[in-house]
Length: 379
Ligand code: GAF
Image: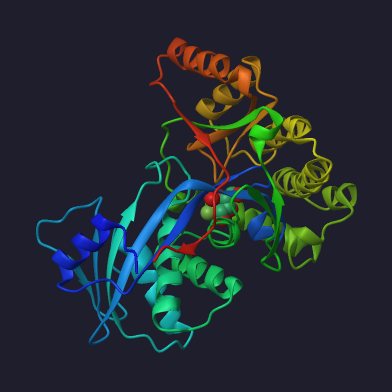
């Protein structure tokens, strides 16, 4: 069995035994389909080349001992008793154990070492990667035989209940279900997906993530408020989820201005995801650009989850020659995604960098994204 050297050595030095198996789960980007997941809608995430790797071994008793290579704690590994929720990053691990046990799975104690390289704080779902890597490793370790959908639900439950973030399934589903060189056409209502080829280099295009450097916590209440507004609109319209709204003008007549704006975003965003799928199938990736721009405007003006730094990044990227760009993820900070002809990447970086410099803002980070593999066993 091949264990990545450093991980295997540190595991042994920390816990006094060798890991039994190692799993990797990626962070994610999202081509299009934002704030649709908790409305039972559509999205198109792809896995990133950065993620979280966990090494695990069974141990006696029910406690979980955890250590992260990125958060070295001189006191040694932390011990989480069964039912304990942990704090900081350990909530994402503890949450998975809590959710598995709450679902009736009989799992024992585990020693677990974490190694992650998702760029910190950029809104690229490092927490989902940690939850999914943990869920997949424990599933394998105790032969639970969970389906992809069950793994997604366990990881989402961990995030909702223990980490306290009322997210939908987007990030966890992307981390479990994506494939290398593909984007996942994801129906968030049924948590079913189909992978569609996404190889930008074949079209002389690049997917460029622009990390604004503006940090926000999804748990700070603004994300939850958007979700509550959508749920309230669905109640008023008498539908289970906003995915079911097919008469937008009719729906808008029954809602107040805020509810109407939120519903307009969700309904039109689902349409844009379907349009993007059609273009990808027709081999016209470059033509997805205008859909990204429309998605951004809708998130900015209808859903009201953008911020000045995201708007400036998107506008400057387009001025610099991107085919399209938009904010990505929950919003209020984090990253934008730009679809850029390879020959224009330098100009886009220059234009965005200059726009930030002119406003006295710290330089953004540019991260070229490669659609990578979803969760898999490393050894
Ligand atoms: C965050 C959430 F975690 C996802 O569930 C999703 O709602 C996304 O924001 C917005 O599309 O990443």
